[in-house]
Length: 135
Image (cartoon, rainbow, N blue to C red; front, side, top):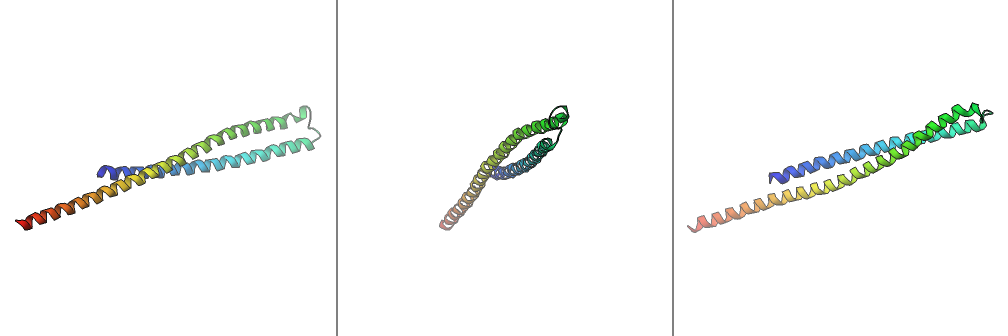
């Protein structure tokens, strides 16, 4: 009986941990999306500045293009990081649901064991009372 109670408690703690990991993943995902939007805006601003500038072509455009290339590389990395973060958050979410269900089953099993034990004690007392009254 202690095993099922301990198992239910451990599964409950594990479900809470997985839910926190999912929430952490979601917040990381939101931060990545925010940074991605900022870099998109930076790229737009760089290209708009280059188009409006009389120095948009040739050697004078090199610093602006270098900055745009760096931003584009960072954006590509963020896309990959975002995909991984989304996958991890989804994985932790699925694990949280599975562990939560297993915890609920373990708690139900523990409750059923307690009920069976209580019923067995009632039956044993009734039999002992009947045997005592027959003697």
